[in-house]
Image (cartoon, rainbow, N blue to C red; front, side):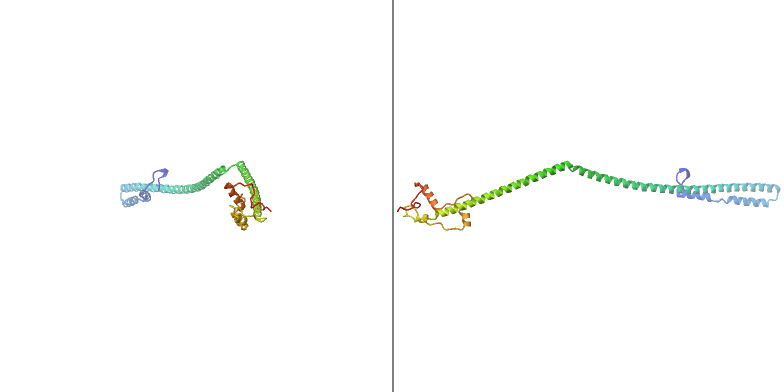
Length: 259
C-alpha cells in the first residue's frame, strides 16, 4: 500500500507490519480489568474497596479509550479503502483515456505515414511530368517529324522516278546496241562474189562469216555496257592501219571486181 499524499511507497514487509500493528488487539487491558474487578470483588475494607473501585474505573476508562482508538483506526481504514477504490477507479479511467489517446495517436501516425507516402509518390509523379516536354514542344516535334517523313517520301518518289527513267534509258541503249549488232552482222555477210586474193590478206579470215552465237552468250561476251561489237573485217582493217598501210576506205575485198 502506497503512502497517501504522494509519499514514498512502502515495501511489502513494511506494509505487512503496518497492517499487523493496526489489526492487533492488545489483551493486556482486558487482563488488567479482570484482575482489578477480581480485587474489587474480594476487597473487605472500605478503603480497599474504594481503591479497587478507582483502579477498576481507571482501567475501564483506559480500555474505553483504547476501544475508541481502535474504532478511529477502523474508520480510518475504511476511509483508506474508499480512497483506494476511488484511486483505483481513477487509475482505470486514466488508463482507458490513455489507451484511447494511444489508439488515436496510432491512427494519426498511420494517416501521417500515408500522407507522407502519398506526398513522396506525388513528388515523383510531378518530377516525371515536369520531365515530359510541353504540349507545344511535342507538337513542334511531331510537325518536324511529319515534315521529315514527307521529305523522305518525296525523296523516295524522286529516286524511284530517276531509277525508272534510268531503267528505261538503259533498255533503250540495250535495244540500240542490239540493233547495231544486228546491223554489223548483216554488213559482215558477203553480198557479191569475192575477187582474187591479194597478197597479205587472209581470205579465210575476211570471207568466212563468224559462227552464229546465242544472243544471251554474245550479250555477255561480245558486248558490254556502252560497247559496240567489232566484226572481223573491221578488226583486220584496224590492224592494217596500225601497220602503216594506206587506205582510202576501199579494198579489193570490199569493192566489186572489174568486168
